[in-house]
Length: 209
Image (cartoon, rainbow, N blue to C red):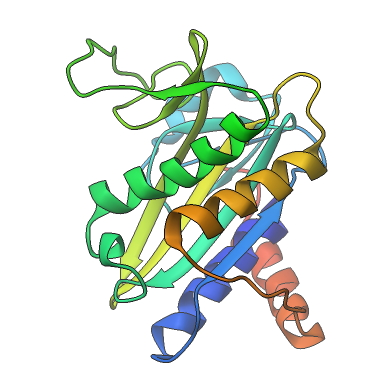
């Protein structure tokens, strides 16, 4: 997990200095159980999770347990899509793409609404917010963002539903992005230099909180 978060940060920082860069959508998994926490999360709030591996994201939000989820990150400039200029609108439109993907797999989801009485807490999947996605009575998808110099990093966790393979979920959510954002996507290879830089940052910055 430290490597993946480090790579997200590097891609985000690179786009801050590359005005013409295209958006980057990347899917990944946690290799083992990890907990990630938002940048403003207080260490004392982790008292019940000391036995778990924890690392801090540069995006906001509370704590998220990983190991049975699909994670994706989206790095984009605010002028890549009209919705990206707004935290609320970008969050909603990204979740429309995730919803499209889950619904296409027969997993009918719904948005949590602003008029629902949603309890507040630090555990992201126990305490959903408006425009998060629910499957049945449980939250299935939510994310956090970091913004700087007109660039957005959105990191998202999607619980993998029963009888759905990770590969099928990647394919369907990817298609959801194509449909909702009306875009074409092209695969890209990460350079050895970029991977090495991410490995170094992971050791220096990302580790047990």
